Amino acid sequence: MSVEAGPPDPGRNGSRRVAAWAAAGLFGLQLAWLLVMPPATGIDEFDHVYRASSVAIGHWRPGTYELSPTLARGAMLPVRADIVEAAGPACARLPYTKPFNCRPYKDLGDGVVEVATGVDYYNPLYYGVVGALARPFSGSAAIDVMRLVSIVECAAMFGLAVFLTTLWARSRWPLLLLLAACLPTTVYSASIATPNGVQMVSGILVWAAALAMLRVGPNGRRPAYVGLMVGVAVMANTHTLGLFWLALIALTLMVYAGPVRVLWLARPRSRPEVAALGVALAAVAFQLWWMAYAQPNTSRPEGGLPGNPWGQIAQGVIAWPLQAVAAFPYRNESAPAAVYGVALVAMIALAVFTARALRGAGRDSLAMAVVLVLSAAVPVAITYSGFHRYGMSWQGRYGMPYSAGVFALAGLALEDRGPALRGAFLWLGLVGWGAAETLGITGVLAKQIKDHELVSATHWWAPPTVLVVALGALATASWSRSVQLVEGGSPPAADEANPRGDAVPRAR
Image 1 (spheres, rainbow, N blue to C red):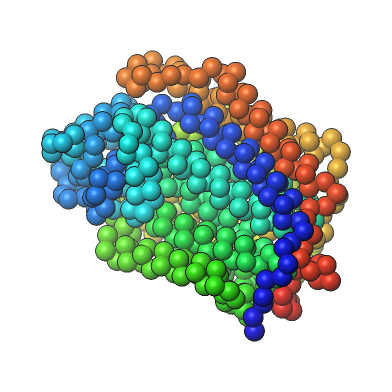
Image 2: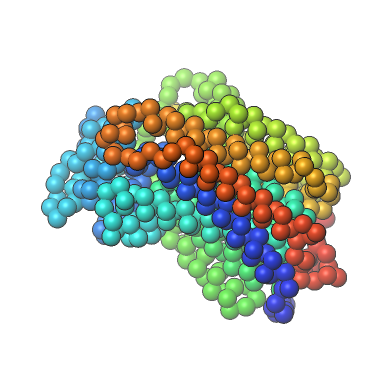
């Protein structure tokens, strides 16, 4: 059975405007993060810019050899000397790096040196993109270009997620939940030259596209299908857990909608969909090959701890959600208390509204329970199994590609059974969320400015606080405008006779 594309959706232009404003808001916050971070000072960013530089000059394979653990962490890669020089000061201030992580071990000639990195065996696709586009630039400018490439990728994926959501949503709830999914840690991670943030935002896109597939009529199916395949391709190749998260998302969708319906919708119905599926399958195949070739899941033991792990895991169960909300630049560095306060109030309010909307909702409630349970259980299981080899290496942000489903499913439930959103409380919430995002950024700026040695070594220009606040205000205004455009109902689904947008009977 095939579903042909119908006439253009009359709400498509409205969806584009909403998506553009939402993406612009995220971009503004990301730009503020770029400005307040001296070169390569993001979490493990020096490692990732080394890898990007190495792939860009043709070395896509894992490292060539390893030095003594007292001399270098990881394996040796050929890297441009100007990149090592620019990233060296940020590397040298970290407690876990070794001498030849931060300075060249050997000069290979033609402006290339050998240096050690702990991410030499990571999938090269992300690094090939950011490294190639940054190649015409040198030193700190090249690192900023790498960041900008990641920023644009993430803003574009988020805009696509919003666009697909507004093709079926008739209230503001689904959009608000997508904005809430942009937790401060997510925005920060999406603003530096590492693949983690790209994968976190790809999780938002995969969830949004998958739910759009379940809700839109025939006119909205094709962009949802293509968007889903884009998200799958990106998520699969930006972290070793990417395929695992995709499998869990597929499992959760089957719980929500039934296996028959999910598999039926996954079948391509047009040439663009066939092409998109082909790209996604090729991306998955490449990641499977890379995992067999480089064996990243059998990486070097580092930070293993002795004894019974349960005490520290219990602490992790508390720390991991806080890290997922706000922890930067590194996972053990807290944000200002007000950031957690605003996030706590917002999450409690959303939890209360969502719990009411899910009452008696059958599979909707079950799918939400699956996401919540697995979001908590997976970090515990991975940490327990690797405690004596890797210690407490799990970070709260690692689970966000899957945990973003909490926000996506909450938006779906509130769309169907949530209260009306009007009045000052809505706008107060948006302003508060934007203020919390901005406060996290200005807090990091204040810490960076106090590190006089780092500022001097990197020749970093510290932006005025007022500029960062202005970018945060513009981002908040952009997000508020995107929400305002949904007033009176967002663009209707393609099939008015089928308000849920169901293409086949939904399993219950």
